[in-house]
Image 1 (spheres, rainbow, N blue to C red):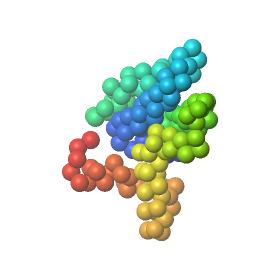
Image 2: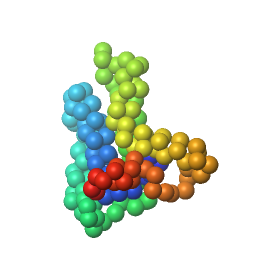
Image 3: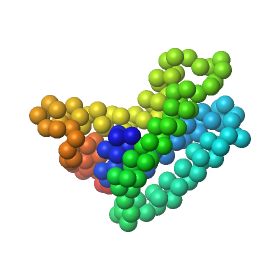
Image 4: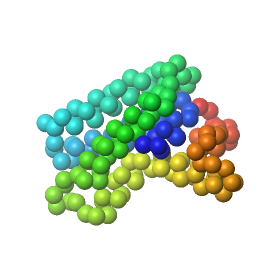
Amino acid sequence: MNSINMLDNMDGITTIASIFALIGMLTVIVFNRNFESSYFVLVLGLIRALLGFLFFNWHPSKMYIGDTGSQFLGVVLAALSIKFLWNHSATEYHTTSRQFILPILAFIVPLSDTASVVINRISKGRSPFVGGKDHTTHHLSYFGLSD
């Protein structure tokens, strides 16, 4: 949840990362042929809502997700990932390694950004809980990439 909140530092980053995580969950739902589930409609609706929000959140942003929106989105993504990526019910294909690999792959961008920010801030003697311009997206813009 907090990784999604910390990733909300530039235009469209949180939205795109969340859409990719939801597409991973949707893939598990489709793979298990669970189309009648209300979760299928929920995940598909969240993807569509985020795509609609992305239109206004693209550079230059006209609308921001904010702390409340990113925390809510993080909680929803966490709950859905527990249901579909951690505890999914694929019968013969379920292995313990897949239980770890699927959530890590779905959330690789927020997790790697949060891990690098926390490690860098602690190594420099700063609190990891205070905001700053040391996220992965900021470093990419320092290298000259555009928003």
